[in-house]
Amino acid sequence: MAKILIVEDEEPISNLIRMNLVKAGYQCGVSMDGEAAADRIQEEDFDLILLDIMLPGLDGYEVLEYAKSREIPVIFLTAMGDTAQKVRGLKLGAEDYISKPFDVAELLARVETVLRRCLKLNQSLRLGEIELFPESRTVLREGHPVALTPKEYELFYLFMRNRNRALYRETIYEHVWGGEYPGTGRTVDLHVQRLKKKLGLEKEIEAIYKVGYRLMG
Amino acid sequence: MRLAWKIFFLTIPLFLLSLTALGTWILQESFQGNLDRERERCFMENQMFQVSYELTWHSLSEESREESVKAIAQGLHRNAGAEAGNIRIYGEDGEEILYQDTPERVATQIQEHLTGDANAGAQIVSQKGRYYAVVLSRSSTGVWIETTRDLTPVFREREHLKTVYQTGAFLITFVMGGLMLGILYLVMGNTRKLSRIARSFASGQYQARANIRSRDEIGRLAEDFNWMARVMKEQMEQLKEEVSRQEAFTSAFSHELKTPLTSIIGYADTIRSMDLSREETDLSADYIYRQGKRLLSLSHKLLDWSALEGKKETFKSLLMTDLIREAARTRGRE
Image (cartoon, rainbow over the protein chains, first blue to last red):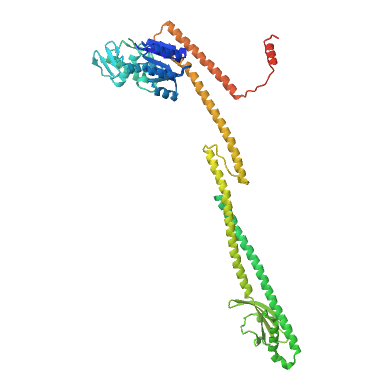
């Protein structure tokens, strides 16, 4: 699995990210400031760097540039609403950014996307006999393609990227349909039912009482 | 420009009107005076002639009298000089002309108007475009003596003066008008300038100042405006500083909020979404608790800060020894 370096001076946040990444199956390292980060990048091989752009000591942008020079992809953490930061980071060559406060599920999604894009690894996600190919947006079951609507595909992709993680209806709605969850409506549930049927995942996708669903596996 | 025109159109016609009225009155007075003087002269001439005539008549004998009318008249007339009017003598019937020094006769109605007691009468007559004063009197010798003076020069003079005056009046008014417009234009020019500067100041050119140095009311206004502009610019800058301080504070504060919130939201989400070990759950809950406390402390600080913001800090200088003594006393160690 991929090795990720977390560069963040706030201990609670760095721990939060590490905990979730590890649970998602990644290997993690943590550095509390720019100097330490630069040293670690030099000594070890990382596949991705999660960088807080507002670091004490060595400027976050400098770490970014250094990582870039070592051809390591970077996702940086920025303050919400600070366009200047975002623009500068992206111009310096970061792959993506995420603003604080962030949704952990979203962070995981971005990490997965960047890794897939940059490492050319994990070209597919597997669950038993089912294989999902993000590049072509296709799903194979026992080698045969499964016809899924765009929404059903997105829904399945979301489950596959957040295995063993409870996905709340709001989260599902925001990721698959975009916009704010209307609060009522059976859209999410109907789609989940259909998905379960099409892929035979009645047992694997479990409903969490009143709040959402989880894909086990 | 409107005020300038208003002033112009109020004063210049009035000026012209009063000039004309004055001129007319003066001319009329002068003319009347001349006329009266001429008439008086005519009358006196008539009287003098009558007296001389009668004296001469009475000094002559009966026989010589008839032929002598002409002779007497001629003689008197010759002595009267070039300025004298014309004399005509009628016979007792008032019709027969006994003597006249010119065939030109001016028609009058004096004779009809002379009643029993009145022996003399005068009239000013216009004939063939000329004016005459005529005095007709009845001599004690029975003849009628008529004296005529040509008044036309008086009238001509009046016309002439009238023309001269009109030309002069218009010329003066014209010059005055031009002068007034010039002055108004200059003055208004300054007000327009001031107006322009004011507008450019309002549109954001806080450096704009009126460069009007005249020592009149407009200059004074410009001075006051410049003073006001300076004060406003200072205030504006103060306000801008205030605003940027506020903005800096807000963004710093906002950042201070987001960091603990990231932890709280993140850990809570992790707890609700994932299967965590007992240890992991405890750790997450602990973080949530701590970061919540941190937010609380932040809100207290904000409250304190906003309470302080309103008040001005007053610093008093103290003696160090007094301060220490006070502190010791408070601690009960004295």
